[in-house]
Image (tube, rainbow, N blue to C red; front, side, top):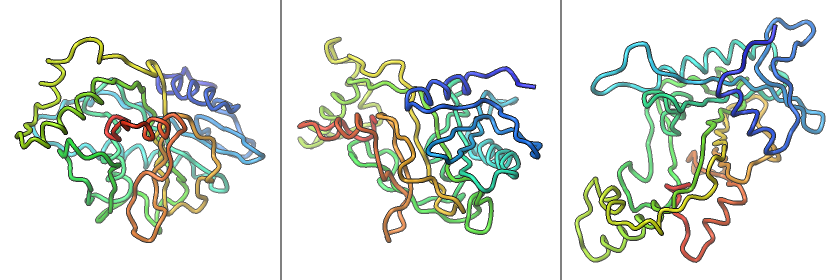
Length: 268
């Protein structure tokens, strides 16, 4: 029996159509009891996707809290769903736009997946850094060489739009810093207050995109030629440094980075 689709699943279908690829929702497979949410076939290869939507917790956290357990739980559930599909690429898709406590952020997801403690560069709070984050991992992990190697990748599915006010504010704040001004934590909000409407245009409104987080320990890695959206990012490890970082970007993001005045990575 096919279940009703939630917001994340409908959004994921929009994304798949944009690639474009053909897909089947909750297809039955003879001899198997589990039904992952989606099957995609590309060049005779099958890919299975389990799509999870994150909502508000039953009790809202107060003060400091660890955001990773809900995502660790989704990884565990996906592992069980994929148990009968280990000969194909299996991909967990996460989406959350309804709760500030369950937004899938890259640093939270990689911590839940690859190590409870992370080394992050550039450090959080560096508002003038124009480079992708990169990570190293330590401690307990859900995805590691000896555990849960069936999941080939985790996808963070996002609503996306480019707000040019962030670009303008970035360069204004960088100029202020260059003049020796002290930059406070509310610097962007202050610049937005001063900004006229001509600098507040939006591109790609209503778009949906994927941040694809490769599992470097997967038994069946996600192929390098897997279809890639023009606004997507793909993260993984590609050199001997061991840093986990952005390894590819969609054509539109590449174009924006190559402008004479590049769009800073924190906006992308």
